[in-house]
Image (cartoon, rainbow, N blue to C red):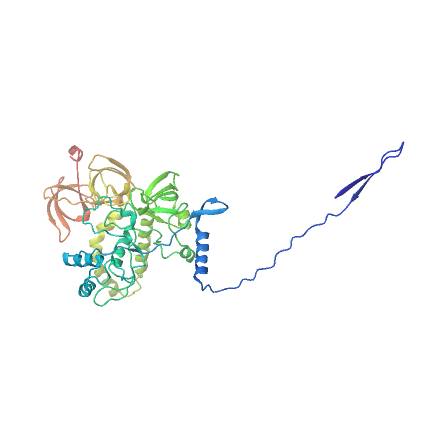
Length: 462
């Protein structure tokens, strides 16, 4: 604090000014002493009621203020709904009830009425009459046109009827009643048809053999910001991040990891994935083909490891081994040769066996080979005339003609590429007998060494 003092100037002299500095006194605020809390048992009804009102006031929603007090909706405690059982009285019981109301009922008639109506006329003797929210059912037998079905939730309707029949929650029913836990069915997701169940429940992780860190990571319910994978439908295999939910139609709005497109998918075909899996697999274009090829290589590796190398030195053991494997080698020689060499040729009628190509639209269909440029570059034509390029030979398999006399082509062995006419077919031995078109020689071949043909231009084979 600065103080300024001036003195009266004398005649013919300058005024004198002096300054002084004083320290400001600080008023420190002392913390109040800690309040001592004493637990007191609330035995009186007034104190209990006051405590309940205070707890309700803490939870209620503030709407507005009136005269300095908070005004809002006080949530009333929900009680179990009770639908009283409708009792139909015959004319004798109705006559006794009218006498009871008129006050002219005798003692004998009162005893009869007590036997007919053990709970009294209006159910005043019922033990549970004061508990629960009762829904009054009038005696009128007319059809109710404006029934308010929203007065009670649909899941509580059955229990409300049982309570109206003097049933208590938790009691068993039957000759030997046993208390059983109440089992309520799970609510079906919206949009799921009757009898249908989701293939992959939300939050389940199929990869149980992952590291401990991945096992500890729990996948919660799908919400905004969650990572998901589409496991069925036309967008199968697509990874994305949830940007919004539509609970009315049970759908999700996601942004795809590849392309950044926004699309709407059903929550039934979406499964939550961890951030680690999303970062590892979301950018893979052909994840299904990669997994299939990986499994095939793993199977071949295990098969080779299970076959120990030959360590026998005696000639007799070698001869025995060669004799025992000769029949198997002869049977699989053509298959071994076909796997190492190209067997696909133009005009062959083959079956498409890959499930993932174009979401399975060609699976198990017969297609015609139009051109062959390599193992992984086969051009085919489907029954609708559509042409498909860059087809792998491993996605195709041979087809055997149905009728005798149809043409086929030999696709393995020294006669590979020659046309023939099928003369006989032995399904038990899996062999066909055919006559070569060029030389009229009759040959026998296994099913896997021949294939049906669909020739467009006969002059190409003359």
